[in-house]
Amino acid sequence: MIPKQEIRKVLARLEKAKIEFVDFQFSDIFGKVKNVRVPYERAKDSLENGVWFDGSSIKGFTRICESDALLVPDIDTLVINPESKEASFICDVWVPRKENKITPFEGDPRFILKRQIKKAKKLGFVYNTGPEIEFFILQKDQKGNLIPLDNAGYFDRSSDRSSEIRKRIMKMCKKAGIRVSSDHHEVAKGQSEIDICYGPALEIADKIMRLKTIIQEVVLESGYIATFMPKPIAGTNGSGMHVHQSLFSLEGENLFYDPNDKYNLSSLAYHFIAGQMAHARALSAIVAPTVNSYKRLVKGYEAPVYICWAQNNRSAYIRIPRFPPHRKKACRAELRSPDPSANPYLAFAGMLAAGLDGIKRKLVCPQPIEEDVYHLSNEVYEQRHIQTLPASLREAIEELKNDKVLMKALGSHLSQEFIKSKLQECEEFKSEITPLEIEKYL
Image (cartoon, rainbow, N blue to C red; front, side, top):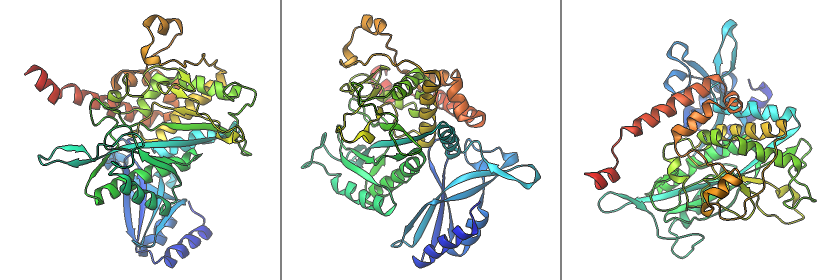
C-alpha cells in the first residue's frame, strides 16, 4: 500500500487544486476503462485503504464466490484537472487471500505487464515503446447512417475537418501528462492518428488508456463518434496501433543499436525481432483481439499479412525505421500488426515475452524482405519460408493455446478467461447474418 508520507503529499496537491472528485480507474481484460469515483472527503480513506468493488461484475475477473476486489492507486499516475476540479489515478487490482492478506490479482492486465517488465529488469533490460494510435471519427447522415466525418486523405490539411478536434485532444493530453509527438489525418476518409512519445512500457500503456478516453470524450463533445474498431469501413485502410519498441540498459543505453550493422541493429535486436516473428501467429490473438481485426489484416491496405521484416517495406510485419546517425537512442523496431482494439497492457506483455524468448534462445533472424511482399509468388513464399498471420480470430486463438511462452506470460487465470471469451465472440459472429449476405444471396 502507499506510504503515509506520500499520501500526505498527494492530499496536499488535491487540496491546493480544490479537487471535488477523485476517479480510481482500472482496465478489464479487453482494455475497457473501468472507473470508481469518490468525493474528495473520501480521498484520504481511499488512498490509505484502497477502494473495494465487486470483481465478479467485471467480465474475466473474479468468480461470484470470491467477488471482493480492491483498487490500489498508483500515485505516480495522478492527474489533476483544476478546471473540472477532478483528479484521477490508475489502479492495480488486488484480492484478499487467506490470513487476511491481500495480493495482486493475477487476472489484472496491468499486473501481467508489470510481471513481464520485472522479468526483463532482472535480465538488465528496460522495455520502451512508442505507439501510433489510429481511429475514425464518424458522423450521422440524414438517414441516421454512420459515415466518415470528412473526405480527406493522408496528411491532407484543407479538407481535414478533424484537425480542430485533434487540437483539442492534444490540449487535453498535455493537461493529463501525455506527451504527444505528432498528429495528422490518416489515409482513409475520417481517419486520424495521434502518436505518443517513446517511454517505459507500463507508463505508455497507462497513457494509451487515458488517450483513448480523451479521444472519445472530446469527439463526443464535438457531436461526433470516435471508434477504435480496426476496420469500420470496407474497401479502405483500417486502424492500426503500430508500436515502436526497443530494449535499453538500466543505465539508459539503447541495446538495439550497433553502428557497424547495415540496419544499425545489434545481435540482441535481431534475436528480439526473431522472437516476435517466431511467436507472431499466437501473438496475433493478443494484439489483434477481435473478429473485426482480421478484416484489417488483409492484402492491399498497408497492414501486415506476411511474417517478415524490412526497412523500406511497409507491408512487412516488423519495420526498422530510419533515424539520424547522431540519434542512436532512436534505433527501434516497429511492430505493425497491433490494432487499437487491443488491451495495451496485454499487448506489451505479449510482445515483450516473445522478444525475450528470442533473446533467451538466440533465435536467428531471417533475411529482410524489401520487395512488396503482397505481390510475391507462392513459390517465393515457400523458398523464403515466409509464413502468414492467422486469417481469423479463431485461428489466432488456436495458435495462442499452443504457445507455452505467451500462455505463461498471460498467466493461467487470464489466459483461460481471455480464450473462453474470445471463442464465445467467434461463435456469436459465426451465426450472425450480415448485410452483405442479404445483398448477395437473398
